[in-house]
Image 1: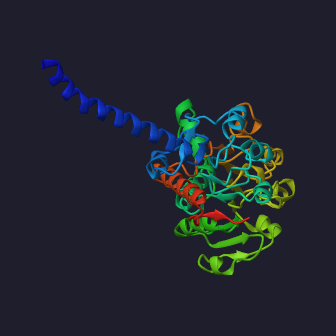
Image 2: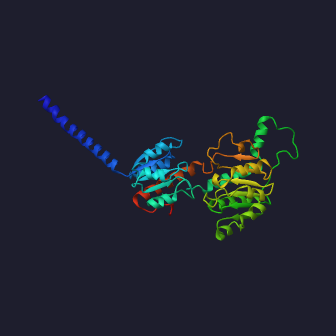
Image 3: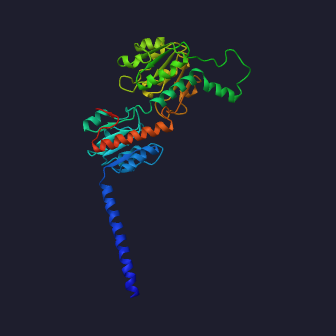
Length: 356
């Protein structure tokens, strides 16, 4: 009777275990049948949470802060339905061929998408999401900070203070260039360009000029800023700030021709993409005193090799592409990229889509 009593107790327990096992197996089968996505990097937590809690996809990820090796990317994208990438990954025909016909959506955690082949996506009917707007404020703040650091020679001054170069007060030592009464030229008047101008106005800027692929009267009126050809922008500006996207039309647009037209007291700032600048021409302009100084948050390549000639110039400040580097901005970018990806998988409208 004791054995039977124990068996009666054991029966429901075994049934429960069997039920759990079956449910677990069913859940695993269901999980495997979900659309597969590949995330090319360890991303900010809010974005990862969105993907995980949605329960709409089976997530595979390159779990590192460093970029996924190309060979690993080509292997892991095979058969995926969605790709969550960063600007460090070149999404070209080779990657798309490796992914195959199942790929429906690419979502990049960046405002720029020059690393993605739009023609190849269009040919295959693949949608593209991106993350504009959410990084506008952070990028504008960094641009102003870089402009001030460059024009007022802050990095040089810090080095002098640390190295013992700080002697008695001298009237002309460490003199730079101020914004009050100046003319600021903006190459590419978009969201970030406008936000930069808005932040610079309280410094007493006298005039804003801008060059764009076409006039933007409504946006310019809010500053206000005057539309001029690139040559006039170069000739008249005390500060030139590059905020344009990298396109075939803007690649290398900042070159020896433009630098030769600038004032020798002018400051050049680029926080857009490194490819808009011919860096050899910029080096020559800085080294020969053709322009006063330059501040760069973007270069070609990235990272820029530590032995690059630009690093040897005191009048060139180089940052490691940190324009959007605030906690809130990077999380917002990750969330937007995640929502774009999920919308693309379900066929819904994305929050921010590049229409091909």
